[in-house]
Length: 107
Image 1 (cartoon, rainbow, N blue to C red):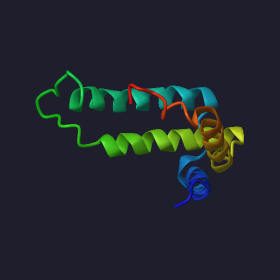
Image 2 (spheres, rainbow, N blue to C red; image 1 turned 135 degrees about the vertical axis):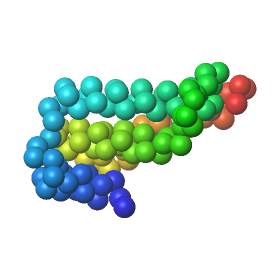
Image 3 (spheres, helix red, strand yellow; image 1 turned 180 degrees about the vertical axis):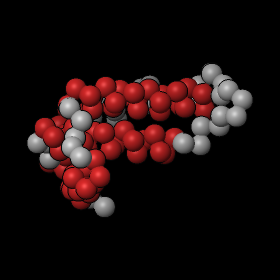
């Protein structure tokens, strides 16, 4: 599935099942919440914290998908073509960082 197809798929789902998009502000809050849920799993799986009894962090992929879903919702409702935006972002990073990481002695 391409990014464009994902944007179309989310829009179709919203039209079919979701009634309407939540407001941009609500979706921004939801996005923050979802990122926090992923951060909690990563902090426990790869960091110094531990899971509570009965938790295992097996839902990391689902949390990433939740983040992608809400980001696509925000893109759709604000008129952002994520394919174009992502391609421009790659170009920006390539121009800005073409030698930066290669010359970084820390890497």
